[in-house]
Image 1 (cartoon, rainbow, N blue to C red):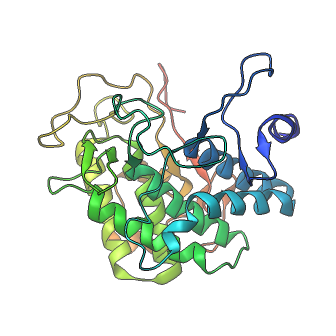
Image 2 (image 1 turned 135 degrees about the vertical axis):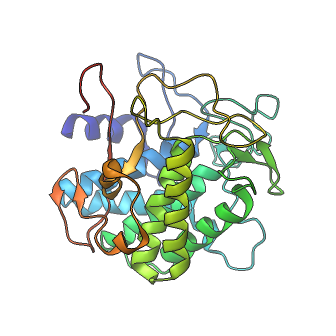
Amino acid sequence: MEEALDVIDRQFWLEEWGRCAEGYDRTFSRLDPYRGQNANMHLTEAYLAAHQVTGDPQYLSRATRIAYHIAGPAAEVGVPGSWRLPEHFDTSWRPIRDYNIDHPRHPFRPYGSQIGHWLEWSKLCLQISAQGVEDAWLPQAAETLFSAAVTEGWLGNGGFVYTVDWEGRPVVEERYFWEPAEAMGAARLLWLSTRDQKYQDWYRKLWDYVDQYFIDHRRGGWWLRTRRQGHPGHLHLGRQARPLPRLPGHLVLARAGPPRPGDMGRLGQVTSAGVRGLGGPAVCVGSRRREKGVE
């Protein structure tokens, strides 16, 4: 951990911007001018994990700074489209809104805004709050991003589209396995913080959807995605060989089947660190099917 954090600190963290650079060549001599939301989102996860382990407030501070720059605009009440978070930036962190407009299905840098990232930032904002940051914009951004995701991203026949344009219209309509996983994590944390029934309802709806269309009950693991257009039950032919669903810790309880609404009070206690109280921050873990047995 110390070695990884040292490399990040020396090579990637941009103190003057409160965000990180994207990447170098193999010799660390040529820095990519591209700046990305995705890398910063995952660095936020890393810093939150580092803060949990070390208690060093610097890591929580950096996670909060990144979140403020990337997801903070969603907390601006009355600003149309503030929840459609830009994904791509130049070296001065100006959004490049037409980036990859001719390559919308790029696996890491697609055109438009990614619904799954709205949901992941919703969850991360609440995790930052759970670790001790009391800034009012965090729960506001979390609620706005979740609401926008289920309004603009959830199509009538079920599932979150991959990307939307800057007017909220779907661009890539494939549904990927990781989006409902992030949504379930966000819905649970929103329910814990607000006790609003709608989040418990969404949590159950999401598990029903995932159980029906993404979990491979015959061989274990999750399907990668559903077909573009049409009913989510039409699975894409390319199946992930070893799925790695990125689930908040409480979702591992689903091994025995999707939880019922009454289980909400108990979920979330199982994490990679053991048993935590309901008020503890969520921890992301994963499961992977091996040739023999299950990890």
